[in-house]
Length: 330
Image (tube, rainbow, N blue to C red; front, top):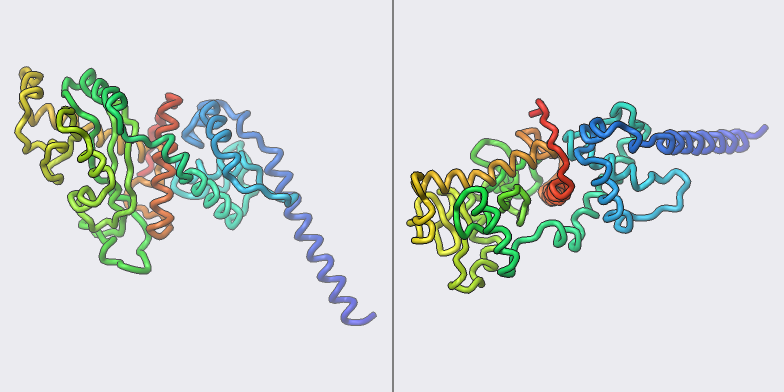
């Protein structure tokens, strides 16, 4: 028997073994049905309830690439694997009764990137992250803050959020923040119900909140609002005062003064502005990949996409009134 024949047989057997292994993984994945999990356990794993997941599946199914391979991962499992990463901050190979542990690390990475890209589709971002550009939409936001806090004219509260990332290959100094770690400085604007109206994750961690504000696109949107419209954002003392930006140091308008009651302007401003702190806390509590100093193991561009994806998911979860799962993970 020739050596070439033996080598050919060995290679044929190796390919057969690989094919069998891939087929087994596919069967293991397909035997798993996460939607059969109890609702509470499903939310703990994926941070959305089953109804919200079905909505998400409808939104993303057409945006995820199709595959004719027999070993292809079902789109439902791709989304669930990504949700679990956003929720836990790491790929969990074993998550209880849900058998995602048959997914290899390279397969997970590919699925995760596909889902993150789908959530960054321009139409998805525009649908679920909407800054009020017309008076009717602004009125809804204004009424929300007025009813909750008694502060008139507020169309959003703004602050910056540091999201830890790996040391970038380029412009390292620009991403090294005052707290001595590499990060993005993410600008967030929210409404009174903790929905995120605007996000910009394109700035480096060493950028100050004022620098981010001066360069962000929403500033121009505010400048185009007619002067007769009495509306503004609330920011802390890191932001520059202006006609559309009230800080603790701003002089209250007559409209605001009439609503102060026994509170001082600074007290009312702080109580109302603190909404954005609550919003960022909820965002990071639900999607813990953004939480603390443990970095996202990605460069700035991909990390920014992950931030955008988590913001979209945060707003979708709010639409579905999904309860927030509190965790001890830091």
